[in-house]
Image (cartoon, rainbow, N blue to C red; front, side, top):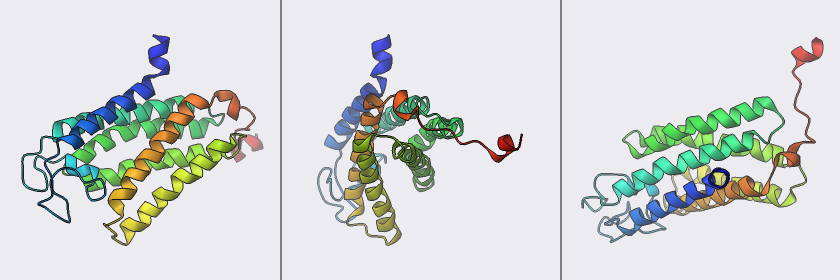
Amino acid sequence: MQLIKKYSVLVGIVISLLLMAVAISVYPGGTMFDEYSVGFNWSKNFMSNLFGTRALNGAPNSSQIWAWAAMIVLPCSYALFFVNMAKKLPDKNAANILKYAGIANVPFTFLTVTHWHDLMLIISTSLFWTCLVIITVFILKTKLHLFKTLCIITLLPFYYGIYLWGISDWNLLPIMQKVNFASSTLLILGLEYFTCKEDFAHIKPRVSKKMLAQ
């Protein structure tokens, strides 16, 4: 039981990746650039192309059920990581934000598979990356120099992706989507299994002005 609990984040992410791999392998075809293309194009297709009842080439989308299943397991795995990470932080307020934002992210991430995709994507992305920014702030206060670098490397493509979205550069966005997913997932696995509460123990939690006045 303890072993299952320890590796649940890893197992969840692996299962979701396998489900997504199946979805990608059976995607009929079509991109926003070429509706007659065959199969999933990593540099042209968005992951959201897997969610519809029909592929972009008009064929019935056999990848949908697999992609939906992946989008149930993946955010649950991320939420579990954020809950575990919250237990390592000495600041109660930051820990609560991490915990509850991580949990709240689950339904919003899953709802990106629906016709509310654009709105749900904005909400889920905001919650997810807010959590990673909070973690980065605390990592920068530790002696975990490798993770300091990895956190910064992970955040940079995300903000670049926002810039691309802002200027409507649809040529690079599909690629950056995969880069962001891969880098953030690898960072999450690293933080889950190679950091502990003691790494953050020296960080003093912030004391509110109200408490100081008392």
